[in-house]
Length: 266
Ligand code: DGL
Image (tube, rainbow, N blue to C red; front, side):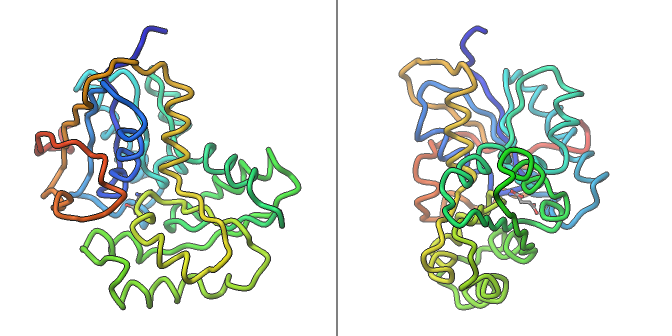
């Protein structure tokens, strides 16, 4: 395969920027189209049919920008739609599930892995299906955290008492269990990672953006050119003001044009 220069990355909103950040930190000379579907976020509370429909439109938009491969920087779309996207579109499309599960299975000592995610992700059993097949000695427990994405999209950061209260509410039931490794199964969740760590002391956390970025580097023949990365940021509604967030999860993002997209037309 010839070297790839131009890739597409998409998510329902802000979360995929944590994946984009990890990709930009690890690579140079790429031209990247990022799409955040801010008009329709959150995806995770919607039906399988709606998520599939949104995912196909997101991919068609990126293909219209001549991308050579697509990174699904969304746990929900990866869980619900990845295999259909592979059947429908003839270009490399990479999702978050497998790299995160492999990383968790390599780390866990108790062989009990937790997965937190959106309603759709947890109900899809995508993480547990993959782990049960590959690592039959592991047990997987899924915990849905439906308020995390709206919290983050609405600008609540982890030092906010409301964020701390919601994290405690969802995650205290798994404190002091034998879960020793937790997959943050949604790309928005790194924005809450310190609070999650405080809530579950001693539990190893898997950031699916980081494991996905490593897989992208290993599986796609990315260009080895040495110039700066170029990113065009596209959103289907207002952009979320992400430039103003002072987060280590966004620090490697280059400046780039911000564009509006009418996603319903794809
Ligand atoms: N970042 C998406 C994910 O990884 C958020 C899904 C949503 O919009 O609910 O699942």
